[in-house]
Length: 335
Image 1 (cartoon, rainbow, N blue to C red):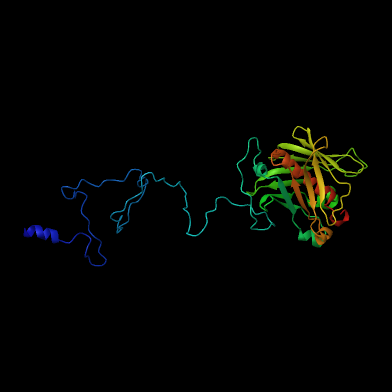
Image 2 (cartoon, rainbow, N blue to C red):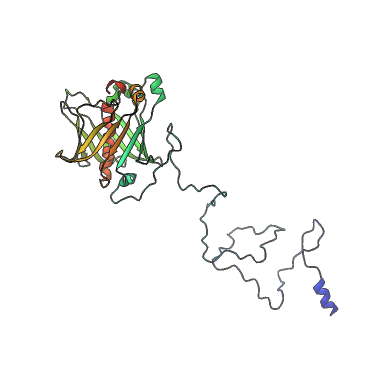
């Protein structure tokens, strides 16, 4: 009896040791009391230690008693998962493209699900019936008078940015050819990917040479044509034809007789081929006397049916840029 009490009162390994001494644990041959059936092992679904895991370091206390372990059905995070981050910080789902020189913090339109037969990047146009185009003021151009590459922000009616457009031409072409210059306009989405490309060739814009009329080609994605905008010769009223990728006429654009935008908007009506039905319009918006007189930074609005083909909506966007360069890019001398 005394021997049994001595065993019960004996100190357990690892307790009441002097400082600096590591506990001495029983050997692996220790099987525990008779009713002990061995360690139950990891629960179902527990991944276990990975290959090459060094194991606990010396002095590591190990898991606490009563630790439930991972619950059944718990999904293992993928490799490289960094966790949700510190508490109180939002999780960013995708990066937002901030164009160089553009305003920061502009809200962006979330990408809707793409419809059938929709070029990548044009799904933004499938759920809107209006586009706002704001040309950025270039301070270097205002101060020096040298023409710089045009930049535009393209937004929906809620002010959310859909695209960012940037002209891609060289210095000599811009300053020698002026508003008649050929250009490549690259339109980027909110992720910074080029989704639409506009190509305007060099052509004379004089009404005395109807054999050499203005036009612009629209590609989406870049390299794949989806439509064209062709100028129709007329002695008084500017006219354009909107064509599809097969060069078939689809719509017409009719300009007003007077293109003066003093204190009022200038509307270019988009009509059917028989010119009896108005489908939409491209409006050059009045931006104020100071901006109209001293800069060529213009604002435009495009209206079209909600159920119109997204390709035709993108072609109308290209028509707006062609109209801007033909009639409103010369600053105050033609307004």
